[in-house]
Amino acid sequence: MPDLSVVVPVYNERDNIPPLLDEIVNALRGRVAFEIVYVDDASDDDSVEVLKAARVRIPELRIVRHLKRSGQSTAIWNGVRAARGEWIATLDGDGQNDPADIPKLLAARANGNPAIKLFAGWRTTRRDTFNKRVSSKIANAVRSRMLRDDTPDTGCGLKLFERNAFLLLPYFDHMHRYLPALVKRAGFESVSVPVGHRHRTRGVSKYGMLDRLWVGLADLRGVSWLMRRAKLTAVEEI
Image (cartoon, rainbow, N blue to C red; front, top):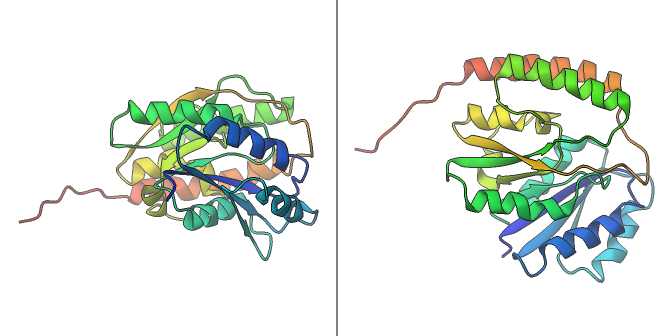
């Protein structure tokens, strides 16, 4: 059984799949027992065929496919459910997250408190368009003020978390953007770890600024309600 499962959600990313897979393998092979779980969100290009071809040379690769398009959070959730590792690393499938940073998150876990169940990547230097950087800056400021999750960057796709802790969290669409707050709500801790960020060199972004803004506002109200309604009580067996 692998110690680590790398979960990568993709939608129409056929050109990013082979190079990103090679980078994951180069970063982890010989360091940790791992598997790679790609979750295809019903792509309408040939991403699945590209994955099947890659599986011939990469035995660690597993492929999960949505029968209908369901979004990034659902892809991550289904990937975690299918994963066999005790710990999960997630990466965006567009190649902007650097797999070479996964060992950095693993090192932080090795030196961290056992109560920490989430090690979140923090993109200290963003390599996105101006609109994306501005919208993310606004969203992070509003989210931090409302949720008090002490996290500078929840939008980074590079994260490391305990599988069982993740599956205890309430599932909803776009939940992956609120993992630090949800982890805190569950009584666990999280830390942010500085990681790199790269320009997208292949394919196109699937999200616009307005998409993120309006959906984010609705989600923020919901997560804020969940935080207020949480009740953690210490227990003892007698």
